Image (cartoon, rainbow, N blue to C red; front, side, top):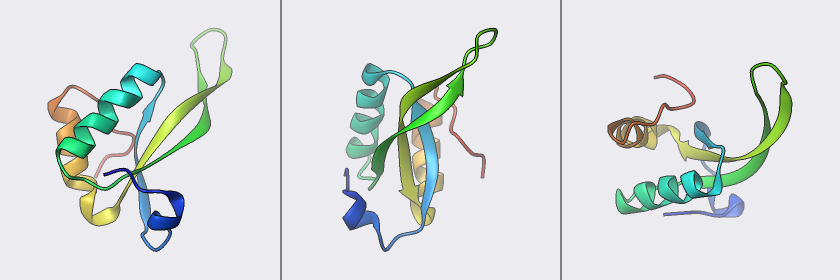
Length: 86
């Protein structure tokens, strides 16, 4: 379930995934919600591009540490690469 920053404040958060497109972000939200995993999503910037590197905006998905392994496994099952490894 999607939580607000205030609801997530007491938890230690860990970056799970950075969605680069809105459609991708919506799929990640649906997957985490379907699996019953609490998450926080915030916009942020990242560097993208190979030849012409530029700063871009994406949706950063965070989960708490106890949920990270289950959330990462759920994303991997759908072919996504998580932001950090174990």
